[in-house]
Amino acid sequence: MPSRQTNAAPATLHFDVLIVGSGLAGLSSALLLAPTKRVAVITKRAVAEGSTGWAQGGIAAVWSKDDSFEAHIADTLVAGAGLCDLDATRRVVENAPQAIAWLQTLGVPFSEEDGHLHLTREGGHSARRIVHVTDATGAAVQRTLIEQVKKTPNITLFEQHTLVDLITTEKLGLSGKRCLGLYALDEATDQVLTFEAPQTILATGGAGKVYLFTTNPDTATGDGIAAAWRAGCRVQNMEFIQFHPTCLYHPHAKSFLISEAVRGEGGRLLLPDGTRFMPAHDARLELAPRDVVARAIDFEMKKGGFDCVYLDISHQPMSFLQEHFPNIYARCLELGIDISKQPIPVVPAAHYTCGGVLADLEGRTDIDGLYAIGEAACSGLHGANRLASNSLVECMVFAQAAAQDIEHSTLKPTASLPAWDDSRVSDPDEMVVISHNWDELRRFMWDYVGIVRTNKRLERAAHRVALLQDEIQEFYALFHVTRDLLELRNLVQVADLIVRSAQARHESRGLHFSRDYPGMLEQALPTTLSPKV
Image 1 (cartoon, helix red, strand yellow):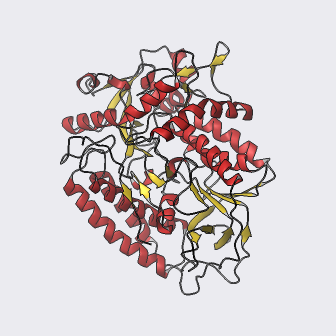
Image 2 (cartoon, rainbow, N blue to C red; image 1 turned 180 degrees about the vertical axis):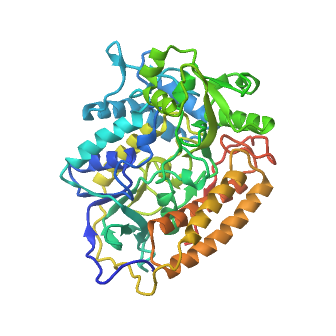
Image 3 (cartoon, rainbow, N blue to C red; image 1 turned 60 degrees about the vertical axis):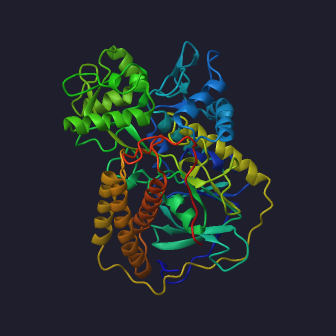
């Protein structure tokens, strides 16, 4: 079991629950479990550096008397193109108002109008049901939860600790199929630490960094999905990668998202000559689901040879823009774009991983004691395409479900776990292999496994993934691990799962569009991959 550990092995760290990830799913779980459990939150960078803080739009919940659970469910099912699990969808939708109320008790300052929560509307929704904090909802929620976590005695934060692998009974040659803990690289000491607990929650987010262009932060490298797969968990629907239609196109703006709410408040998509093009693609115009809008933009860019298209909200008064989109307004202005007077250059970018580790309604995976929630999981809510603003509420609803299940669990701590052994590995002689492979992976995934796919493109991608897997596995076996190596190892594994899932789907459905199979099959079936363990 090669990796990095220097001199004497540090003592095993014992907790009741290990939570990997410090986004909304992870921190919600920690806060819900802390009254009765000793919780470790393990996060590979600073606690605030996850995808949650980047979420602009808001949280979908039925809050108005003019709305209904059935309408929210119906909208989710339509966006999911027949693949949403009805029980999971109903669980999330019916618990969404309670989740919002919980955040209110913690102090999240949701935007209000006339003394009531202000509700906005986004693509695919039939009503205004998006609760938000101006255009920086995720940042406000994340900030509030971090404040609560840091003053909660039973929660221990391990920042700058990168998940290496899960420890299971099978890996140790023991009977049963259970998760016993994990190994994590502590960057401060350059050692791999051993964490032991009866229960582990993977809340590691998605894998947007497998693509060249993404709205995701650098942390989105599919760590939990890859680790669960290596441990023996099934994954599901990995071909469904949501490309957000409107990422700011500017050389100095890395991964800056232009919220769905801009289109919800009347933003129009234009060609460089000012022509509005969505009427030619869908009757719902700019409020069509994200997959439809992303494909329309991709089509127009390729047809016209354009570097980008434009999103125009300049017909709204400046006071409206500054009130509803203060961060977008300010960021664009910094880059010389006055959105009150000119359109915003935008391109699609990888945004959300709809598939993930297969998990049930309590967040349980195929391995006892191992849970997966949030973007790392495939709960069945999103189907073939996530409805806007359903992700943050999913994090909270399944955090609560997992926490309740853990409270009733009878799993006990195990005997001592082996320390990480790196006695037969050495320091890497050069790191250029990692940086080169990382760049190659993201480029061919963008070119071959992007918004529009073909059999030939997928074959090319599969061939390159296999070559990279061999190279990276050799590197991993010979040298001490680093965070860059661990992330690359996980990204290549996730890329393999995406490509294999895409090759298995012989139709076009939701976010998966194939030129070789442009039609939709009559029966909607999930794509489930099982590891050979």
